[in-house]
Length: 75
Image: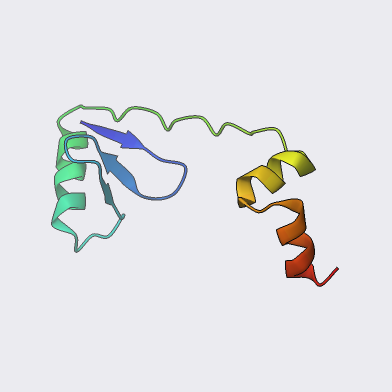
């Protein structure tokens, strides 16, 4: 079974391989044959937009203390 992606590649679910739309690629040829048999790929997962991080969250994600950040910035 296959799944569409938000790019041009196709995701083969059996092994999580991304298959580029290249006619010379044997995996892509197998995907096209699978389609010709009447199969349909799963739709692409929706793109989930996340909320922007707050300054505090950015600082925590950096792993730096305020003092370390100031030193890094030369403040």
